Amino acid sequence: MALAAFALNMSYGYFVKSRSKRELANLFGTYGPPELVDEMVKDPDRYSMQAAMQMADAVRGIIKDHLARGLPEIGIGIGLNTGTMCVGDMGSNIRRSYTVIVDAVNLGSRLEGLSKIYGVDIIVNETTRRLAPDYVWQELDRVRVKGKAQAVSIFWPVAFKQLQDADLANELKTWAFFLTAYRAQQWDQAGVFLINLMRMNAKKHLYQLYEERVASMRFLPFDPGWDGATNFETK
Image (cartoon, rainbow, N blue to C red; front, side, top):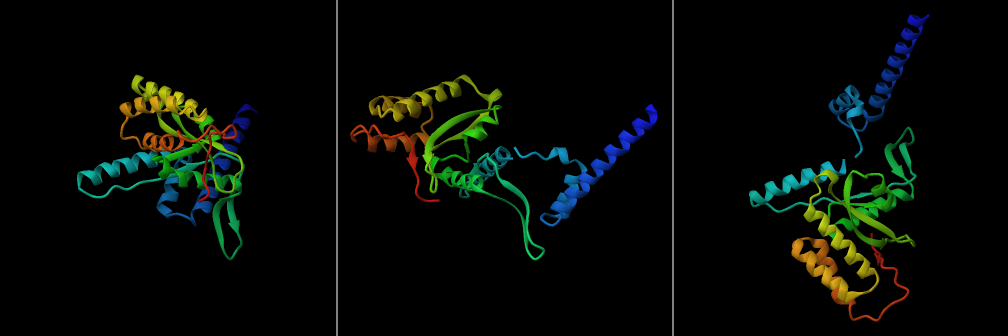
């Protein structure tokens, strides 16, 4: 009986695994090259989602190569939002597409559009940040994007936690102090923190962006109704 149960269990496992591979091949076979689908079927567990960081790293490598050869730089912008959505093969027998829909997708698209404004290659929302604890995150801003009444906090993955050094930790700590002063409309104090940040990383576009903001806002009267968020009316 034990041998029979073992054989049945192994047969069932093989059947389920084979069926999963067939379903994977049938699903993606119409959307990608057959060679890629064959590789995915061989070992489906190798293919994760967590891909944004690898894409950004690859582009940084291309940028270095371009600079060395005197070619123009290229850029990449990735927006990641975590939420409930509808994902799958949608359409009819006449026309179909493997896609995602619902509002959470729209916010991800809005975040992607903000990447060039903040000078980073990846922007995520708070929910995504919480689901990726292995990274060191820098909060970029609180934003209210087009079509959204509620402001959301946005973040940039700076590095893996194991790669964080004392200089980076000090920079992020100073940045947190700056954001607190900025959102409290304490412009003089915010300016002091910005000076220190520029000394640490003068080429960082994010600090240059906020330097311009503080310079334009320091002469405005205190606004008790301001929530510290930046409003964006375009996509």
